[in-house]
Length: 106
Length: 140
Image 1 (cartoon, rainbow over the protein chains, first blue to last red):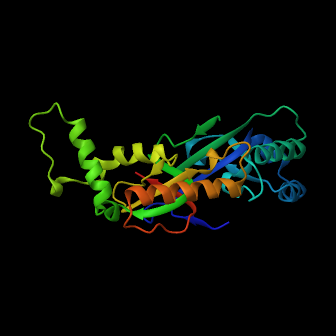
Image 2 (cartoon, rainbow over the protein chains, first blue to last red; image 1 turned 60 degrees about the vertical axis):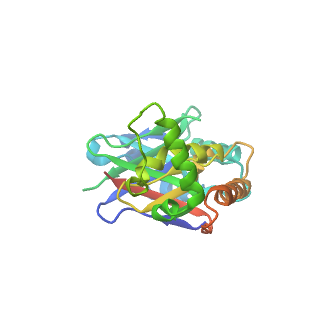
């Protein structure tokens, strides 16, 4: 999919718009091995950190909304992420939501 | 749909991720069909103010923002205009708005169709770009 990323030239901004589950940075650090990274890649998932300068302690695991496949419905997109993240983390009870974040890196 | 917006507290950053088109704000301001409609609406809004008089040279994009928004909402195309000093308006639909039973292909077709209808009716002099995903972030 063609994506135009238009971050403004006079600042260093970071943004994402994803459907994901949230875990703590500590949980993520404990899991973050090469094997975990490989499995995440195989499942088509990736991770996003919340703004480190804000003192947040969250990591989001899911997919970006602009990665919806052409023949995939919104429901299928969400269900596939829920299934993959639960499999990746070995957890059955996870809360999923759309998350939009942006921050200025200075 | 539950949406969490995590804009930073120590700065004013904004972002969006839509499928749609970008248009120069100045091109919109030059479109007679839309501007005539906008001026009429501005006059209706200010009809109780006896001193109100609209001059073409005083019109700027911020004055017509709300009117454009209302029209775009009718076409199910919430607009995103970017920073105030940008000359670009973005017209389209957020990817988060894809319906449960709608495929991405259908979503794109629907957005494209709505954009064509909107331009045909209100901005007939502008040929919209090909739709694409626009992701923008800025620091105010």
